[in-house]
Each structure stands twice: as structure tokens, then as C-alpha cells.
Image 1 (cartoon, rainbow, N blue to C red):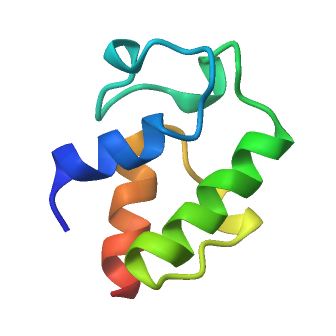
Image 2 (image 1 turned 60 degrees about the horizontal axis):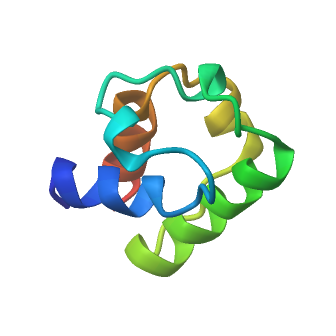
Length: 76
């Protein structure tokens, strides 16, 4: 799993947020469009793209995309 591809996959979960605003160290909860629905989309993306079940607890203990990336990578 490569970081840049992960960022692209993550940014696709947003309809109105400029993908260029999303970087590896972005605090995803600070994005205006972040919501519980977006969280579910990220969880589904993780399962579809990487075969990893990302939990609400995993997201809860994450602050940045890098945190989510590391969690998914550790479950591969």
C-alpha cells in the first residue's frame, strides 16, 4: 500500500472538499465535510480497496490520515 494512492482513495470520499487540501498529515476531523457518513465511507473504502476492516474505534484513536494509514497497514 503506497501513501499517495491512499491519499487519493481517502479524498474520493469527499464530494465538495478540494483533493489538494488533503495531505498525509491532514487532521481529517478539521475538514469541513467530515461527518459520521464520511467516516462510514472511509471504513467501506478500507474494506473495498485494502481488504481491511477499519472500525469506529480505529478512527476514534486517529487524528491524521497518516494514523489511519498506519492502522490499515498494520492489519494487512
